[in-house]
Length: 194
Image (cartoon, rainbow, N blue to C red):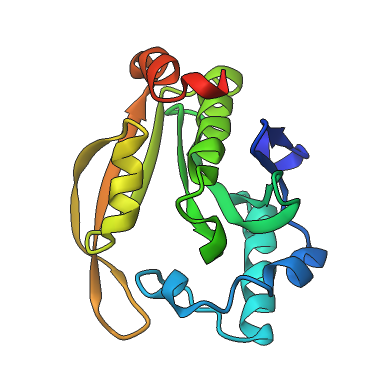
């Protein structure tokens, strides 16, 4: 079972390893950027909120809800952010990639694409899943562009899906990649990572 394994994924740009409590020291250097959290349901502006975020992520793994990774940029050897597998359904052969955020110095650097390749490749080729899904706030244009750039197709919008910190009801937009699409996407969009 996924949640009981210590999964480490890496290529020449990114290293994803299971999140641990001690990651707080590296994450604190990048996490207090308000822009990261503007369109998310989380908010990290101080040490206490960061500790709660990490504790929640680790508890989510124990509950087998999500598997949080700490992302390390191998070019700088620094913690760059976090991403997760979640909402896994073995019966349906489905998993979500999400809870992804990076420090500002790592955005637009190619790190996200490197991480998504590792996660997608693991989901399709190791777990043998049929569907990988992504969701974001319909207003999050940066995240939507990133999903489209890796070949994800828009599935639709869940209206009033989530309650945001400011009381706004978020419309979530879903994207997905299916196993029959993976070979083409891997050999075209991700050809530099094979």
